Length: 330
Image (tube, rainbow, N blue to C red):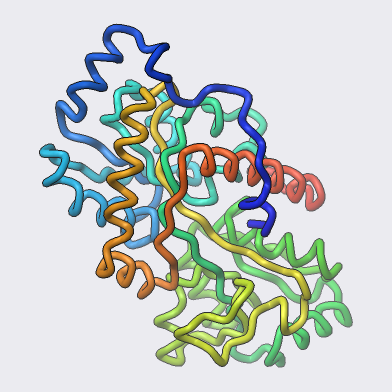
């Protein structure tokens, strides 16, 4: 995610939530009585990842104030698109939400025929967290810094590979951004998910993996994985000796995974605002912030409009990178 994603300000062309004056009678009734039944939070990823943890933290903290059960459903498949399609088709009444990651903005960049539109079919609610990646390298790769890695890759183009959690995954695009900024050539080796890519790199069967911080930090602390840099703009407080990519080989490089909450398009704005305010209250709690911090992420909130602009900017950025690297879904 580029630095200017937060700074750029442009309104989306389509209305993603229904203003009060535009409510149909059924929508007005739904807004007044919301929530009137259990709320589902769909997650397109396996349990244990940040989108799943964010959904479960919110479900635990909001059940009492909403006075309804909040059910987290993991719907796996198609790089989180199965869950997204289900959410897009759900009634726009605030009882079905979607916990997403940066992958939500990747889908249109690499797939020509999606069954949903990641912008028009959803009402953004808020960001929930952001977190960098750790640059994990094979134990026998003769590099200690990003500068070493870049020099080696330039000297021996195409001889080294990088793992990812699949074509078009965040880890794939993180390396594609590095490639576009440094001109290095690396061979892409996609796997089914983060655990497989991480394990293969730790075992030395692949050379590099840009792992979400939360997925690799404990292995790095235990000495089981070797990290040479972090992709944030500043060093992480819990690993102050680990340099950033930008300061150790690729000036200006920054990559951040983001996570957030969406509702189906045309969900009444009053419901969107209620959810955003309640989620912001949860994410401001010290114990919740510490829970996210332990995962190498930062609990963060935004307005619905800010989150919508971020998604639109990210779709544009990912599409540009996909064209440059000829990245297409299998």
